[in-house]
Amino acid sequence: MAGLAPPPPAPTQRWTTTQSRAQFAALAQLRWCIFRNAFRRKGGAGELAARLIFLPLLGIFAFGPIVGAGYGAYLLTSDDRLVALPILTWAIFALWMLVLLNVSPPGLSFDINTIIRFPLSFPRYLTARLFFGLLSAANVIGTLALIAACIGIAIAKPSLAPWATLLFAAFALANIFFTRMMLAWVERWLLTRRTREIFTAVFLFATLGFQYINLNFNPGLQGRHHHAPNHLPLFRSIFHHIQPIAALLPPGLTASSIVSYRQGHILGAFASLVGLIAFGVLFFTVYAWRMHREFNGENLSEVTQPPPRSNPKSVRPAAIPGPVSIATIKTSAFGLNSTVIACLQKEFIYLRRNINQLYGFIAPLFMVFLFAGRVSSTGRFGEFVFPVAVAYSVLGVSVLSYNALGMDGPGVQFYFLSPTRLRDVFLAKNITGFLLTFFELVLIYAVIAFVAHSPSLVITLSTVFWLLFATFINGAVGNLRSLMSPKKIDLLRASRRQASQLSVLIALGILAASVGIGYGTIWLASVLGRPWLMVPVLLALALIAFVVYLQVLNRLDAIALDHREDLAEELCKA
Image (cartoon, rainbow, N blue to C red; front, top):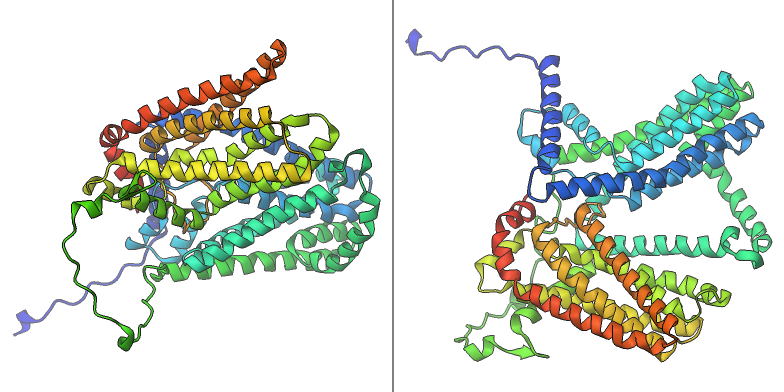
């Protein structure tokens, strides 16, 4: 019987540091391989070219604030005005948040949560989550601004350099932990439809309210007849009320610690440093708690929520459907078949849930309302305020048409399984975009007529025909790019990326070309002294664009079959 006894359990081996390093090296190699191989796919060269174009533009955008942070820190330190240093630290924090909200974070080609299935402890999982996506535009630009400020202080007062470096390093870590914590909880709040709608409303009101305050209270935007002195008492009152609270937050603690160290108050400087570190630990702890719940398998979404309880007495037996006739299937309204009508209903549901689409529709109207009266009162553009406003509004809507299948996600496979023509699907998507564009045209006309004056009939007709031309061209090219370079849009993720970078570049190029054609038509009509000539020329261009759009629309089914593997790979991935 002794030989039948089970063997003693093998001694458990502890996880070594070498194995941890091997895991992190494998994750880094995986990230690099995915990034490298993405440019080897079909259309990868175009994406690489688009990134090479956008990166210098982002660098130009970031160059001014970074240099301004360094120069401002130098001036405040050399002039012994470090009391005003909180203005600089709060400005860097505001820049950090502004870039975070307006520039999409680097997208990952796989879900980082899939590494949970491997033998991975929570500390290593948390470390991987912290480092993946760390090199976002907000973190890079904000950190460079802090480095520039530290260099400015070191040049002005070398004795402050070690302490300023320590403070700015702690401040940078606190900001990084804060942004990661905020994004993690925003994604948690976006998991249900109700919270997404609330977040959409808050985001719209916050961004548009900031634009309104900046335009009406910024003296630099008031022109020669600004009323800045009338607003100074209000600003001073608000500043005195929020200053005690702002001094206890990370930007205020960073500045106060440097100021206290400069004045010889070492205890106060250390106290502010400890408070700054405490904020960083708090942000990191909240972020780690969120990640720990995900590590334990928490998956909160509308799909995983239990269905609402229903009263058994109120449940009626379902009626047995009768035979469906062919006449019932082919019902139509306004000349559209049932497939197009059903897809239109789906697109309007998408419209309500897509934050970026709503923002692209509402923001131009709000900006036209703010600027139209001011621009028309200067007399610089005259009647051309209306076409300029319409051209600006196209920018917010046209980019969204270059990724028409992004919201469908894995549901795109049903288009190929069902007897549905992709022509009808894209027609419904294009009709939704056309309706939004021309509804916005009517609203812009009403706003300009209210705050300024109504444009002439020639300008109105010319603008309408130019909009038709630009809309049909964008629709044709956008449909092709939607099939050739799709991009999955996940409403449960806090990202503003709605299309590939090459598609965005193409959309901007087509819009610039359309504006150039419109300006050339205006110039030709003014040279010939025939303003009415703009109407037939732009009408002819609109008809040509409509013919091109129909030709592309009729070929979408064949093009979709050629790209169905790419569509499934991009839109059906987890």
